[in-house]
Amino acid sequence: MRNLFNREKTTAFPKEFEDALTALKITKQCTEDTVKALEKVLRDPHKNEEKVEEILSVGKICEKYTNTFGDGSLTTVLTSSSTVLSIVAKKEKQLRKECYENVLLPVKVWAQDDYPRFMRDVEKCRKLRDQMESAGKAVQNKNTEEKIVKFEAAKNEFNRAYEGCKQEVDRTKKVHQHHMNCMKLMSQHHLMFFKAVDEELDKATEAMAKCVESQVKTAKP
Image (cartoon, rainbow, N blue to C red; front, side, top):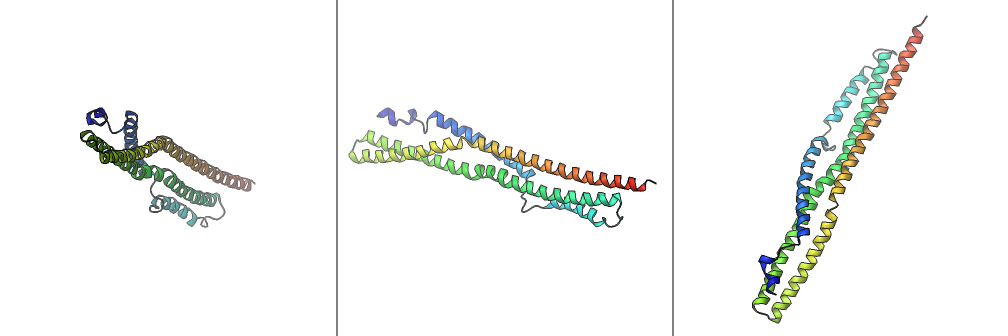
């Protein structure tokens, strides 16, 4: 039994488990760096409307002068531009909202809430291991029924906590896939945004071209 309770020959957790904790610590640091970068791009859509307002303000200027130049091509350009900018502003706001809620927040929650909570469980497990070893040494020093019962209780409590931590590690190992899915979702949202904007620009360009063509036909003798 002396080897079983010798602190110099035992570690808190098996090497595989300790390696997983080290990998998660690195992942946490990478996640925090990613969150900082995302926060610079994905401002809270509920608190920051400057960018949307900037786009809308240009559209409002175009709208303001749509009735100034009659039915000519310039009016068509202003009307089309106003429409496109309004739609782009709304889609840009929706893009940021979707990415903020479905990309930034889930990644941020893992780094700031889930990981620290898990590490508190790990630290609790370490303390239980210490208590178990201490109870084991007490049995070594004086083998009494009371001390054996205390040791068995400490061992059982540690084993339950450790099994819970191992299960959590297995779930947490999937965090890389979770982060990758979030970033993939962000890319998909941006692709859909640019596709939608491109479609609106095509519509505006087509409307302008038809107006110019109509005016050319009308101007012919």
